[in-house]
Amino acid sequence: MSIRFAMTDVLPNADTEQNGALAPVIISAEIYRQTGYGSNHPLAIPRVGAVLDLCDALGWFAQEPYTESYVASIADITRFHEPDYVAALIASEDNRKVSAEYRKKHNIGTMENPLFPGLFDRASTCVGGSIQAGRLAMEGRTVYHPSGGTHHGMAGQARGFCYFNDVVFAILALLDHGAGRVLYVDLDAHHGDGVQAAFETDPRVMTISIHEQDRWPHTGLLDDRGGGLARNLPVPQGFCDDELAFIMDEAVGPLAEEFAPDAVVVCCGADALTGDPLSTMSLSNGALWSGVQSAIAHAGSAVVVGGGGYNPWTVARCWTGLWGKIAGYALPVTLPEAAKQVLAKLECDLIDEEDVEAAWLNTLVDAPSPGPIRPEVKDAVRTVLSKD
Image (spheres, rainbow, N blue to C red):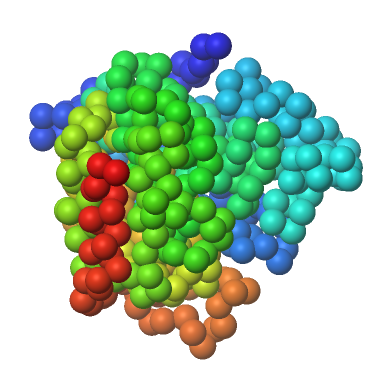
């Protein structure tokens, strides 16, 4: 089944060169200015909409706005997702309720994966953006899709707040448009289980996931290699900047060099940052930016997606700064007033008002989070590099 693309998916300046390569592209949509998931859900917070507002406030969209996301068709979506699952999502939204059969079979209508107005449009826009990102990346550029990163979605089930798995579609699009091998690097605090499951028997795709050990979905153990090309690095609580740099240099780098990918996809989940309520990792956003840049340096075509992140201040600052890094903007030491106003308006039920740090309201760049490289991190690197 072929993937259909909209005719408007190319920026007017798409052929502009930056340091000898085509200029990077950011893809998003106005639908993300609305929060989804309803009340009492960890994702019922401003995320991508706040990123768009911050980029506007910093003047980073002065010449060109973001590229509007393509919306995936049902034919696109059922290339990976089971038709009866897609039909169940549509029927449930149309009926404004989820049957017991659909809830049990497809894991929708639960506290984890609730039914809410606009669910299908939001999820299909996310898939469309990643399809589009893969196609544009294969022209020889980096494409940033912060709305993506729904890496837990399974072919016939919603999982972990993810209804469709847009990352799968980004990888498929890269393969469709000329990539012989695709490397997937997941920096989210949670294991990229849906992506590994989709490609674990495909010799064209290597998946590497760095995630917090003993955390949901409790998969991605150190010895889990899927069908052969999966590598998993569960890391301890308090995982710091120096430990991430060590893993990127000593594990991801050698694995990538041996695999020799034609394209790279990176999931930059912001839930690995200090201050996120759903993990106990301790990274700064600068460490995540460096990790992304290290990963995408292994190929001339790259797709970078968002992922998890449940602190709206740290998410918005991280993903905004990531676009600044990718696009080559100078990151301000202190934010301009318009940007501060964006951050001041954010709210989150999971974080008490007195716990909102001043830096989250006034700056873009976190203070570094250094620390020792612990023995278990070194052991994990040795294990994933072993041939056994």
